[in-house]
Length: 176
Image (tube, rainbow, N blue to C red):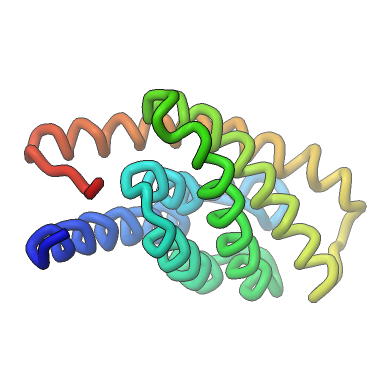
């Protein structure tokens, strides 16, 4: 890949990360001090568009840091970083056998609910270990993680389609 393509790819990914951070900041909480994680949806978009492990890992770390800065969960800073790094790795490697078998929209429809559930579980487990949880673990999974997975799936697919339209309109690609 040439330098011009590297800069274009980094710029697009930076914009997507920024959009994810902004969405994470402005998304309201649902019930408990937790919220749907639209930054996570943007992370999945980056993973699918790039098909590159280094980009996946770096994006997972950066989005983890941004979401830790904007978390509404008391003590959720470190759990946010842990869950984004773990989830980005799991999703990247889970998508490897699907790379050339399915369309990108199908991969998004698969990874959004599964990835959000993985992220939520990792977040809650790490939060429980690090700061403790105010409620029973499974109750939080039912009340927060499952609804967040449903919302992330719907909104994430809309975001993915919007990103694809924008990339097509500007005749831009990020894959090597």
